[in-house]
Image (tube, rainbow, N blue to C red; front, side, top):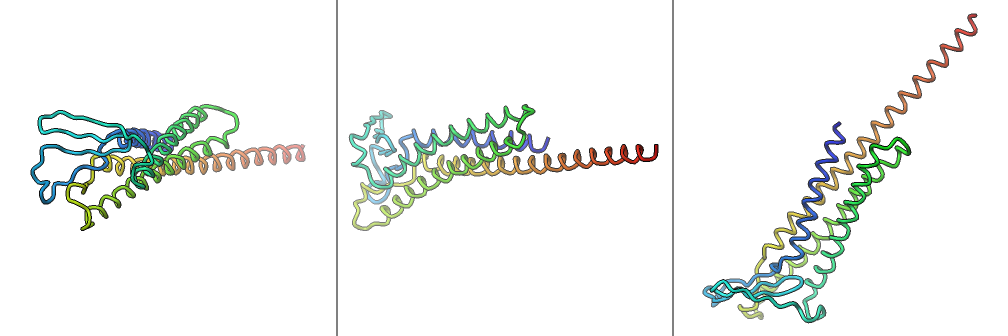
Length: 217
């Protein structure tokens, strides 16, 4: 019962983390215009994402433009785009493995493969979270370096956007959920090993009693 509860908790956390990956990847708010110096009072806000950049006017109108070329982006945004796409795909693979492991718990054949499927799902989710964490931290490091660069104009300086916070939260959920899934399958494997030893010892004792009764007769 405890292992089943851990599996459900791990699945909830990993699914929430995967949804966070999708939100962080799609929102065009990785970099936001910094309000420093002469930019304290501005009539527009600049958002920069992985796929497009948006300009929000003071009147509430928003204009977005998709990037013309991937090679024109900075190195951190190119790496973040690739890592986020791979992370989202790994999340799909992890959910497929988790569902297969959950269905396999009702099977009666090949019980030794059940913990392995869940453990593979947990490892996939942990890898997914680590890749997203690298993408977010890499982008955040580039923003910090540009913000403290004295040679860069104030209009070109950026701050952290909401997508970075979504990414940090999603990566934590994925890593935690994957670890919980791995722990649940390890406890299940121990329980199966204990039950197997108990059954074996029971059969052995019965055979000894039968043998002794035959000799007595």
